[in-house]
Image: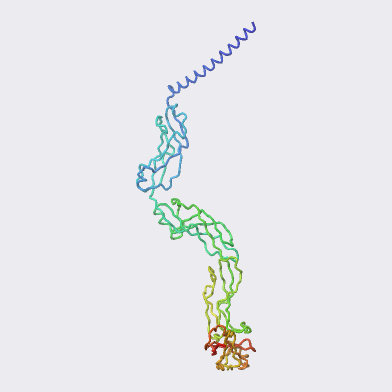
Length: 424
């Protein structure tokens, strides 16, 4: 008896569960039927619908017009339609676009934003669009290539160096924009605002390009697009500062001659030089040329071009240095040198030599006044170098005049000696 009761109880639970499922199905059918019969249409607002902007196939594109200031936007759209069709609509189910039919020439237009369903079979009515218009400026665009320079007021060279030059890579930029705006640009400048001291060639990249007109006023670049180049390398070239002490060589004198006793003066004793060789010493001695001692009469001025290495720059400006002599305290006197004081050096191998000149007369000798006053003929010698002679014959050679006794006197002029060279 208890088993029968228990079975009946289980059957009653099963029947109740089936009724519940059936009631849910019937409720859904009733709701669906009511939504169609009692509420056939609904209004729905969809936000952030992206707006498509395209010039393809428009009169504006055929006339060469371009939009200058358009930025991508989205709109909020209220639509109306059958609940079963639009009830699940999202932004992806709507297409919003800008109507460009009225754009036929340059100018600023308030253009309508049109919205439709992305599904052609759906019957959807657009109730409102917010915003429903967009303001766009149109103009004909052109291009222009402008030389590019750099502006870096806070970049400087370390002590002992100089910022020689600043270049950009690329050296020019091509821009696109309205013709009137581009015509207003006279120069383009790559700007670097950072501060830095440098002692070697340095490259800094920047994306800040500023345009200026003829009066150095900044040009509004909001309608200008830089083509191809988005950043610029600014190259800073550094040179080394150094001091070059100038000197001249004195030739045609004996080793014992006191060159330092010559009262010579250089128009520039030293110059400031900048060099691309960053490892150069801070100070160097630079020989500008040589002077034959026999050409020095204390009145003559010699001029030499200052020799510099490739790429070096003389910061003093002068290309030449002049060498003159201070005659104060100096005088000259004429002497005679006899044959026994005429000497030869560098005798040719396998040859004999004979000095035909028996004496040199009227030999002008310069030196300090106190020395010249006591100088005698016997204190002077004439020396001839024959090392350049190969063949036999008669030769005239300039003699070097010197005094073994006094190391600060010299002979002026050619003072030629006649030499005969013969085979042995």
